[in-house]
Picture 1 (cartoon, rainbow, N blue to C red):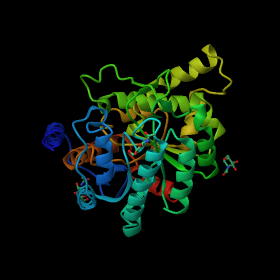
Picture 2: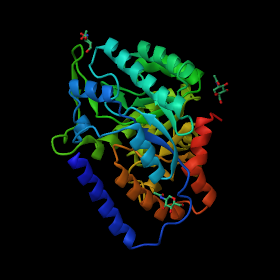
Picture 3: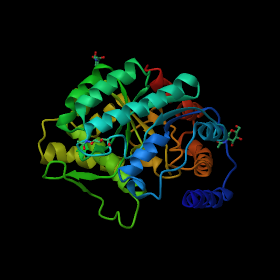
Picture 4: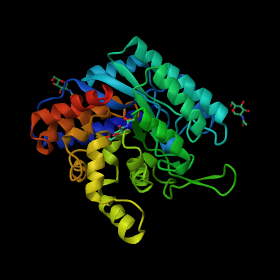
Length: 360
Ligand SMILES: *[C@@H]1O[C@H](CO)[C@@H](O)[C@H](O)[C@H]1NC(C)=O
Ligand SMILES: *[C@@H]1O[C@H](CO)[C@@H](O)[C@H](O)[C@H]1NC(C)=O
Ligand SMILES: *[C@@H]1O[C@H](CO)[C@@H](O)[C@H](O)[C@H]1NC(C)=O
């Protein structure tokens, strides 16, 4: 925990310096809905550590978490409702062991469903799926939606090297589309499928020096969403709603490039250009504010989407409470500059999320 506290106070200090130089906080800091926050049940922590994920994606450890601490954090951060999910590495911990993954996934989803049942005002959840096990994921999807009242599902950019948009996932996406499911897309460590059975190769060239959440996560989000478009998934299954973490990561600046390549160089049989991506975003995509989206990162995304597509996310407890509060200060300070209409700001903090959760 020492390291987490240090990271938190570092972030707080950095932002305090930043804040001291500008206007006091303004409007609309109350009543947020947080679509990007995590629960860390003890059994999942133990299984993760046992499977070799004690320092997931290169971060110093799995943070402490409890229901009480989460509620306390919410009241400090003016969050009225949190939609919880299991974060990286997810619930499929051992390549090839679907039995174990199905059991752990179910256990996590039951845990989250219990939180939601007991505190329906405060908690909701994105159900975990045991990907890349598609059959297991279809069964869990039905169970989570029909019996556990999940608000949608959480998937990772890749599952043991199977990226969103992969052909093997088509039966799952077909079902997500049929049921009009909300899919929360969270980054994980990059991975390449090996030539052998379950031979997987981590693919973070600088992982020795830098934890993957530092920047590989952003490349992952860009890679996965690009593949959702280029594989035709977004066209074929238009009724899925996506929430992309961290304001899309590194996606916005490559949109023009991958769409141009698709038609003029690869000649893919797709009607794709930056306008069609904008249309798909407006129809079915949301982007959350987790991380350091203000003061600068947001502007690249805003060339492609409007305020209606932005939602709030804290990333608690992987961003510890003091870090979230410091970032909230930064958001409060800069959001009016990016979104001068206070109704847009209210939409970002709550109304857009409400629309997703009410499935309208
Ligand atoms: C929470 O709301 C109060 C009252 O509006 C405000 O003073 C405070 O700055 C807000 N805190 C955060 C983290 O937004
Ligand atoms: C899968 O994991 C379970 C629980 O850890 C273990 O008992 C079982 O032997 C594993 N199966 C395979 C095929 O590795
Ligand atoms: C999916 O969306 C299309 C276009 O909006 C619509 O025509 C179709 O009925 C929808 N399908 C389902 C299953 O809701």
